[in-house]
Image (cartoon, rainbow, N blue to C red; front, side, top):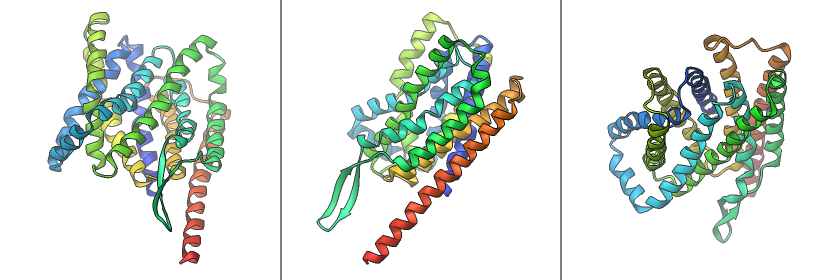
Length: 324
């Protein structure tokens, strides 16, 4: 239950990203600066945390041993995750981006065959390829159904091109984020804590953000003071607090693809938090009764997802007890 609660709390802080990214876009800010400034601002906060825990040297030694892997998977997990989300904010409102982002529930589950799990056998430890958790996937589909139902009326007011331009980058991001996160968990193999891993991925993705910001400097000019301030808030809330909470939750269930899918499913709460935030801060219209009904379906789907994961855990433990 603790990983689920951490995931929900992370979703709350992640929702600030969608709200403020849309706010910055409406005020004339460039998506390039919205994306790159977040990670530049994240760096000092994370450095302070890791240095205070006296873990910086250990992190650098681990990164040095596999630097190419750190750079490549961090660029995918952070760069190809956040840049497309900010780009989508140019064409879509925050609620549509937050809704589309829930595709990651399916994306994360579909990535399972790309990873190997270590299991104990009579002949010792053995690695087996992960399988798609179809039971958990069914609950994820229920959550997505609730999201679709909640946004149906608003989606009708948008053109097809706007929807596609907003959704395609999010689909890319939905695969990049869990892929980069899981690959880095494999590489770290429990040697680093969550703060070290987030800092390491931030440092390793800096080449991507530096190149992107140079491009933005020549094409868009310097960011405004308002965009800098809002990017700082996003960096602290979403980039530091939410990311650490989410990574901590995924670390707890590391090695169990079904439970990992359950934690990733909690990110559907971002939709609810984003809708509420846009109503209060961006004067968005209040959702209809159908939309609120969709939110209830999302909640039910999350509860069932969590219950199913716990039930499977109990069954497995019972079998292990019998075998003993």
